[in-house]
Image (tube, rainbow, N blue to C red; front, side, top):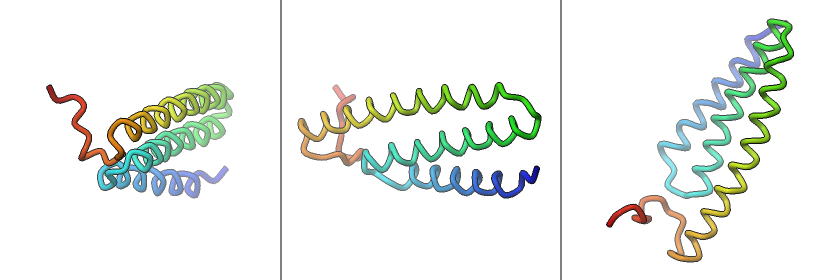
Length: 99
């Protein structure tokens, strides 16, 4: 099995996710960037699971997908709640943790 192409794709996705987390200040874009990070790690897990002929990585990948789906639902709910309260989802303008 050739592993160079999926690993390069995963590295590209991970770098796009890191750029999205560091450069974007919109709440939904941050969630999408975090999803890219998790998906790239999941892709690595599946590739190496197939390389080692082990099905445990595929099972763990399914659990990661389920947890990620729950995280997206909760994250979108939080972003919608913040938008209703503050009329913005810009992360720089939210100072909810300040006393």
